[in-house]
Length: 429
Image (cartoon, rainbow, N blue to C red; front, side, top):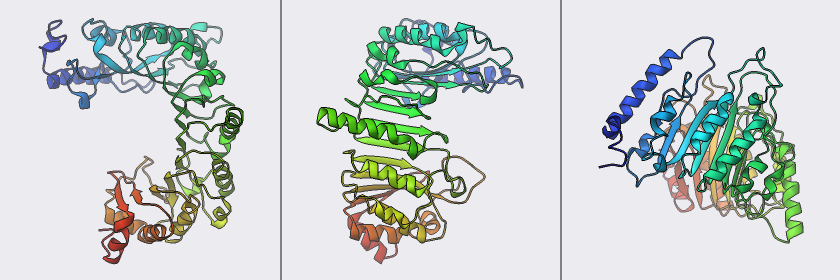
């Protein structure tokens, strides 16, 4: 019998039925909470268990639990987290709670001693009229003590993400995550940079760091960092990357060796279309010139820029082997592909190219991917310069694999079959 099956009749239910019960409770609670004076709630329900890990009570599987906050009490926590036979089995937790319940909720989380991944979202139920700046219990500055205590009790926690969701204009204090992480074993960290103080991260042995939003002169932990990601809505641009390149150069000069960073991701999620372009070609050229002085082999770049032939002035980026590029391209025009090809040629040692192309038309749906089904044929008819791009780059670069990304999956062309498919006119069928 599965672990925990004897503790409650509810937990003796089959996995599918157990999920159905919790989903019913979730929907009922969600309907009760729909009131015009309430803020938008997190995903509803007492307990959402990942369906792709459907062996809910079997100890040989990692647990991935999501606990949204339910106004009116701590029943979600008492329902599951207080069960001694279940808590050691939970390895992943995604939890939401209001700012005023930080201490209580983080204490509950600290009971999950086997936790390996933790995602926290703190939301603010206050309004500007009711906010008292002298009330220390309503300040994020008080979170550091709870987090530091939490990390000391979770020896296996290596993946941590925190976010804050404040809809009011209330000003909050920063959080010194460097102090919180001093005794932790965190290797993967994701934080909204504008909300937190990051000066002490230089001494933290992080391997993967994601900064969401602008960060004011952080000290990057370059000694062991392998991937560094910058993402944000309008607050992340190529011009904000200067502190990183400065510290990269300083580290290489002082240690005599390049940082071990293998992947740099820059994603300006706000600028999706030409009419909202926030990046100039000059900014792009400057960014890539700085990148050419590093030894970073992988670049993932999402940016909205109107390309022109000035990209020819970029020095060869010989260290970049893998490039993932996401940018808008004029529909039904081949000129856009010509400019993309010219940009790609600056990566003289490239072996793998992934392109995610976006039309320059501002569609009603503002999701990351267009709603229509992008078949290969439709994709290539929308961007008719793709076959020429593939053949041109196959003949003039070292790229051996082309990956074109769509919402329902990617399609791949290799260097060997690209010319044959072009000749048979089947490359976009």
